[in-house]
Image (cartoon, rainbow, N blue to C red; front, side, top):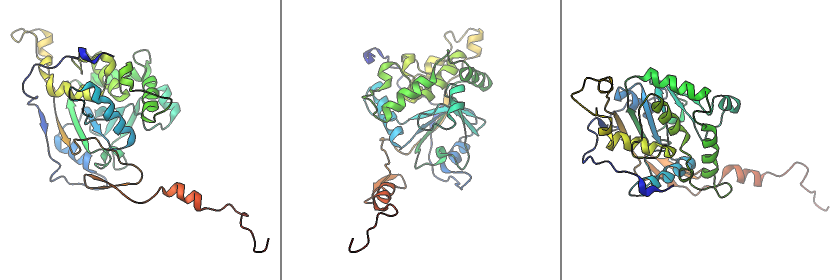
Length: 296
């Protein structure tokens, strides 16, 4: 893919309807973890939820998107999904293959309940979070998500999941899937659902490069692209014009990964001296009957 053709927005200031927020004064509990407490505080119940994580898979996905950035820095974001009523996230995850039969039948689509047990609520696992809205017709977007889950010919999310899993796990010499036209599955789901409703989530980028970074840049810098073409007209197009809006919280500007030997202390990832307990436990364990008696 030739990235030299990517267009830059000509606006000089960021979207004034996109609010940067703080994590201060959030009331956190076991049933209301930090990220969900923040989400509730924004007042947004529906829209596009962006998340930036610290796992190895999240880290590699954030770095992969650097090739779509002018500064070549890793993205804040690793995954995304469609938030529904503040309680559920419709997404297509790469790193969580649960109930594989259902994932296949639904074209990779998965519903994640946002409760105390969800990893997405943990700020140490997902320090970056944003909620964006590109329309106020959320029912239409949900309907298109359902279509994608039933019609694999619209977009093959399963093919993208396989491509990204191979890359994130460094299998078989896999290279950056974005450079081969494979978008990040969760972003492809969100972008295609909006496209079916006539909303472009990534102006200036090729559709094959669907990724959270492209959606973020659209809300941040391409908001003028959603203005009516003729402001004085009373056409249906102008009546439907909607400027992107939302809120975001960035706790980890520079991408970093937490390995199995690392500790997360506040917003810092700290390397420990402990080994891999599972592997070391296997090495210490002697098979039954292997001990020899003295003198034999």
